[in-house]
Image (tube, rainbow, N blue to C red):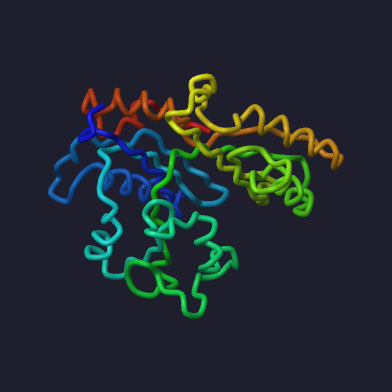
Length: 265
């Protein structure tokens, strides 16, 4: 594609899944302006609704836009607060994990560490919360569920497969989460660079394939005396996303996810 028509994929993650009307409103806002006109070359490809965690992952594609989007949102919504990560966080380019830790994201309450101000907007409040906005290579979400409720077991396995650990898997970010009485090893699989020759040999275009991740988690779980229940993808692989984006935009379908009648998982 020419530079002016390059596309970007956005994974919009919202704290709503149990109310379809809310999810519908968000998908509509992603592709249709307030005056009822469709945004050009933009489509919602997929919606994954996780009722257990009450979150939805919405895959949106559109023209590669300026990183000023966060400030545009702040100008439009006066209570909008956000921190930036990845390529949007200039010049530091801190990762999402690093930024979450800085803001106390994992403490269970509203992130409000002393002296930490959001990059955009006012101090966050309990009603409007805090949003993360960033730019990074395409990420594939892959979750492996193990048959145990012991969080410490899950944490040991998550640490072992993490790329930052000795002997970890390349391009894997991971954490353990409780899910329906079992433990889920929730992972981000980072994409291979587009100019990497081996990317053509890996169907998912990721540094570690879901199959390799599942096999490693199964091996580690066996050493802990537990079994693996299953492995699930949340959303689309990079190749799936690109193929569907080209089709949806070529045919001018802003709500392509409705035509597919399937939620990828």
